[in-house]
Length: 622
Image (cartoon, rainbow, N blue to C red; front, side, top):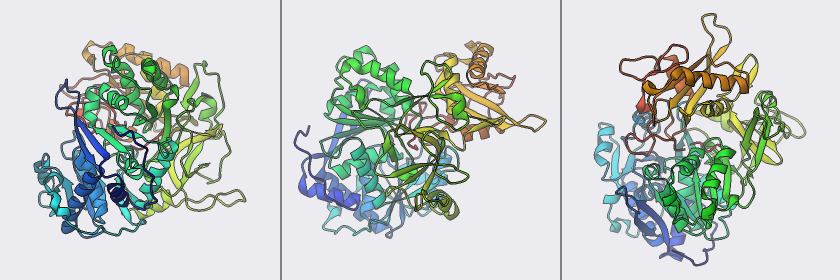
């Protein structure tokens, strides 16, 4: 491992310029390591590229891509997780092309989305690997799209070709959103955007001055995985250690071992992964762990639950894990990824809020032991950008303690959505209403609800997901948290609450909950009415809300996005279409006489082996 002092970071304007700089100044230091786990008992096979080697591979692939596509055209990255994904992505940028980070064909349940994104991006070429080349050729048959296998490009193709002088304001890549509330859209990220956000993240997590290693299993097609594992290490000249998401899901201790093996390690994961580690890592696997060198554990991409942080800390405190390493964070693809973060070395920001006041748009404190209190983690302060809470209707700035839409302004904010001019103007070109205190300029409307308390950003939910019944607001993730604690048969973080039109009278809205049961059981062995009664009773007691229907479904049946988050919008659409109705041969269980059929294709985990089911990450929301 490298124990030398970290190099001084220059003021480069693009990621390819940084790669060339490090190849010239620290050529023999490790830049990238991919750890493969070919067998269940494997401790990991390491494949490492130095900065010299990384630069050579990037230039070779860039030369091949430049011969296949005109500057400014799109290149889809359809590689499995590994070194070829990184070199292929950076090669597209080096060649002056626009990368489209995606995933190879065969990701269970996401074939239609992949085809739709390719149709929207219209890439001239695709960079992939020989391992999945046949599947890629089948997917692209008849399209005329050129295919480059990164691992088949020889080193000597790099030659002495001078690098393309890329404008920092030019488009670097399209980051497609997860589609949790609408159809996926390609966010236009410029070279300047990604360099700025990488620097913001490095500063926020204390990685801009000392040596660090980024250790991640997050998929590289996801915004948080791409910035944490590629952009930030390239800007810093730091080592990036990667593993496959499936390897983490199979044995989460593998990620912890890699964190322990590298001093001043930084890791990131969605909230579910910390719960998963706390429950799945055995005492025997913990025995050889030393986590005192971990400086930051970023928790984002889904609501951060203080209880999860507590369980993870309790599970690994005796392994030396610093209690101040936890960094709840908030971000989204439209801002490249990182927006706001709790800093390492600071205690966790805990907020107990009055549920009724929160429903009325006020973040008022409550006693933490009050069963009706909403417990939230603070997502710290903005990372080199401006954040304001706005009234989404009047477009006025709201004071501290009031809930509104989170608006963001900074050099990391993308320039719009690919081929969506009207939506881009609405989302990326927002302006505050007039007034002496109104901030100037164009602002990003995130669609997320939040408030500022004690100087920290608190994210309370999605504006489009808000459930409104009888004029009262209910946050779906709040209802879901209550439901999953109501009965042990309900699978954690695998349920969706949403509103549907009223009954035959057509008045008002009804609230439906679709929840997966745990893998350890089956509907046939469950007392479904008892589960439904427990869930309904808990929601009624805590929220004063009657659930019109509770639908219990098999693992994998709740719809999810390509980044693994539960998609309430898609689950709602499928419910209304009758997809969770009784089907021959399907498992069923409903709180109102209806049924639920298995829809395993909708729930398989991105980046995981077929059949694996767990939530992986997109839109980074703290």
